[in-house]
Length: 284
Image (cartoon, rainbow, N blue to C red):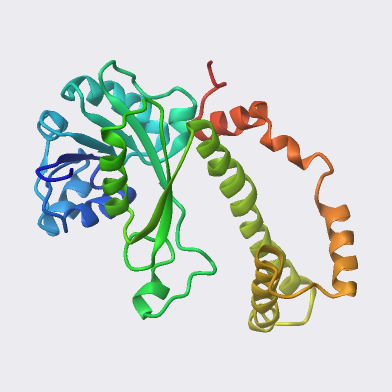
């Protein structure tokens, strides 16, 4: 299905553009790389990737990968999508703009969004390269979740193969709706997960500040307990002790708001996506 596939990467010199371009460069596909910033052009040229204009990149492409920030997708797709050939695929890498109706829509094209899961905290790593690859897309296996908001039985398996390559090594590509992918990213992953991750760093720093211990001492205790907390709670590896459960109840009452589940309401999802995209509100 993917023989003679032609692809284009828009924004090939950015952070995600460099990542997906590096993986696409390893394939036998005909890939064209488009980038406007001089620094991004130089980064690609140094790695043997010739950079062309957006028009040149997409005119014959079967799939166009938009590796640009969500805040730029409205302007970039408005410029580039009219240049794409009939029947081709728009592939974006984050669901926020798709959920917020910020993509330029055109009849006759298939629209797909796919986001990496990043390597699991429970991934069994074996090599230094896998340990070093915390983001994914280099050496450590990860999954991806994708959504099609213009369904196509023809393009779905081809898009899945491309997704496996750009985020590779990939264990599995899961499929969801655009709405539910937005519930995962940002609500579950960023609004909750990343916030908690930063909060853990904040409380580590504050513990050092209000005690006589140095940072290494606090890390030694805290990092191990974070891991056992995650594996106990998420995998049921060991039961929490009775005393720990009481302390957890106190922490929940002291720190977490009783109405925290409201962030799963679509109204709250609209608010956070609008903030991320610097919009006044999401228009439906």
